[in-house]
Length: 79
Image 1 (cartoon, one colour):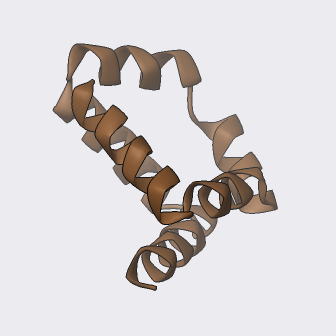
Image 2 (image 1 turned 60 degrees about the vertical axis):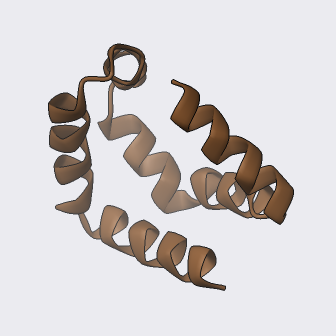
Image 3 (image 1 turned 135 degrees about the horizontal axis):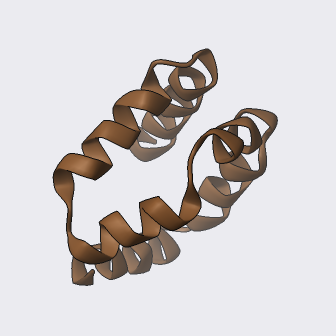
């Protein structure tokens, strides 16, 4: 969990946190939110279950919305 907190602080420090929130609130982000079970994601992250998180990520990246969102996040993080 500490790694996620560190990432969160770095996103805040860099000013990218708000842009990540905007992407999450986008139409693509909302569609993906309906696909994923938020409780399952939270539990896997809390337990440090990398395999479960990887499986969920693969599920997301197999959708057009997931591909677009990932591309937008990648651009954001490079800029």
